Image 1 (cartoon, rainbow, N blue to C red):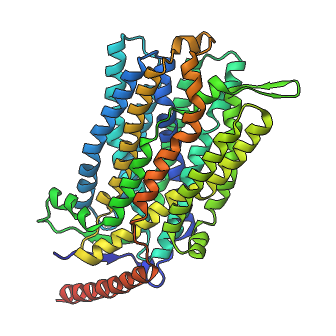
Image 2: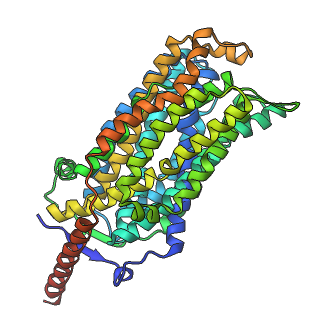
Length: 485
């Protein structure tokens, strides 16, 4: 089965991707991650603490929604791969039409509805199901653009690096939410209003920014054979062991026994700096800010670092080794004085140095694996391949939500006590530090074992690119002869 490949004129020569297009895609990912980071980080918290829904039910809601996403993601990817489209317009239309829908859905999810418990469950479930479906189309298309940006691995790695930085910027902005919340609360704004305002700004505003990604051009156009079925589109994944191993490794991180960081900071952390008392919300903001700065800086040098240490796989291995060792050390140091809190922040910042580059490595290896599938089968599969990224993220979040819901229920968390400013029970308080600092170690160990089986060879990448270049040139020449007749 052969796929016809066409190339835009800009692909001739070195396949260079203009910086203004990389910026457009990167800013689009910033906007999307404003929306996604706010929703994934704070919607469960909003349901438990402001809608006062049963934590176990909230866990079930999000687990069920992620099962739904597990079903629709590969189908969405297969649909994207095999639908009829104009040349160089395989993914771009989804970058233009899905954002406004997503922005409206996110805003509605943060409305304080006055329904019964079951009514709230139905309301959140329906909206989140719809959000998951449209998000799948957007996410597959945004990340799939990396693979279509250039036929050359080095250029794709450059695109992957900068768009991952853009995505990280969106997450970093949402990381200021606790500080925004603390400031607005001090001005007398209710928590319900704060969550809704940020739902509008991060949700709808972020998605409108994400439409900027439409300016990125596709530089490879593949014509899918009409006889290929959706099932064949999905089963092509069996030719991509790299992608399957990365997906399994990422999923394993969701098995960590932990809850959202906000529970630890808001209930356990109060810092005294002279005559100033720093509350948990501000402490979480400072921890995220200073703990993340070194990692953010490292992202700008990800490709150079990968070349120095022997490839993207080495980044993934070093990230998990650092996480295991430094988190265990941090556990024994503690956190409950200002010097210990500073040491904790410094050590976690060291964890984030290689950890911040993981997504760049994942996306670069995935883009290369799509070339390998084409090398083996003659078929490209950006849609199905990058749907696995979204699929894995949602499945990881689903199992993490289920674990979090059960842990909160088991530990006796009381959202009404939180609202009244009363302390939580002794058992809940006892387990916050171990879950916060050691919980991720479980996922790190599992990830490390699985990712060690990924093969990452520079020589093989160069050989695949050479063969594909010759193959594509031959197809172009044959097409030119047919068209001339």
